[in-house]
Image (cartoon, rainbow, N blue to C red; front, top):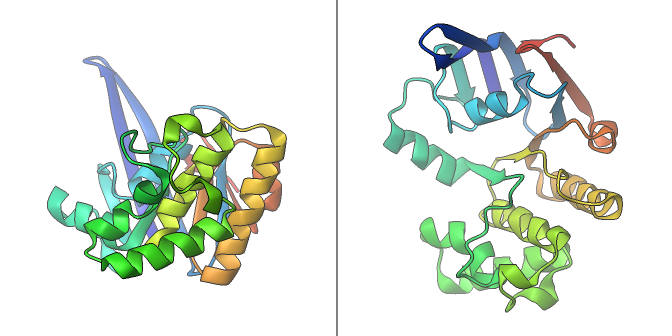
Length: 222
């Protein structure tokens, strides 16, 4: 599902200083895996996740997602890849504030051209699975943090992507909601057969993963 070979990424803080954010990353993640990228703050977790998700370009190396080489794609092709194959769960939720829960969950499906009936049925299905079926008419501002994160997860899985990337999904949640969210994510992995990759420094998230990828200073050390 994911293949990285000698991936490097640099950031320039000013004209004189260069940050080597990812250093010769080699990584293979098979379809159906449930893994986490972990390590200390600033080690490159989010940068690596963004590179895998074709949100950020890399400076050298190769990234293949589901057989497609992404590092040479233009932005239009990268956007198409993200839309059709990858679901994203962001730390800040990134829900559309003017849309209700039903519309937020179905948003990616609508962009992909699913029929209204298909969207309605799938929204109801994932909302029930994530225990937000009674919130479909609510606006994001009227939801708790845990509920907003579940809506974000529902939106990510609704269009049945092959891969879900989740950046620090429990960062804004208390321990109870973190445990609930991770149980649901594991269920989605097992039932929907979706490959799921987190970035996290949360010990609970790390303990739940079946594969742990540890970064230090942009390098895979374990």
